[in-house]
View 1: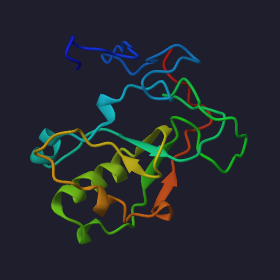
View 2 (view 1 turned 180 degrees about the vertical axis):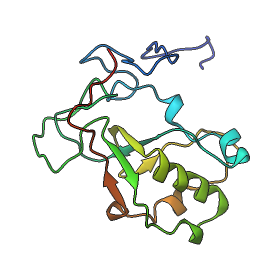
View 3 (view 1 turned 90 degrees about the vertical axis):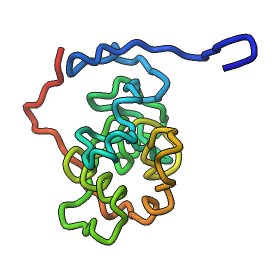
Length: 164
């Protein structure tokens, strides 16, 4: 917000009443992946309720020149197949012990095991998006203790086709 009113550099419309597709193929959004941001963010009401019932938004420093549903766009020139694609679903391994973390982080980690994370943009490695809300304690330092090796990529079945 500026003194003259609201200002935006980008605007996207998403129909969240369906499972997608959310954007036309090749279209970006405020995220390089073309995915909506807010439905993937950790919110205060979820932490208060003790459960998060959706995948989480995550950034990684490097991605490859590819995307997988629900993403519709990529932001890389690299063809390195060891790098994740935009929209890649990654989950916390089932054997990861969440009990050594604080209660709010346990809630987040349980969602990571159940629903996973979706690679949404290039940025800080393994940065999970948490709503800017003063009621949410700073959880980033605790979440940063989790290593990339604690995760696994979820591979969609061969016959999977995204909604049309």
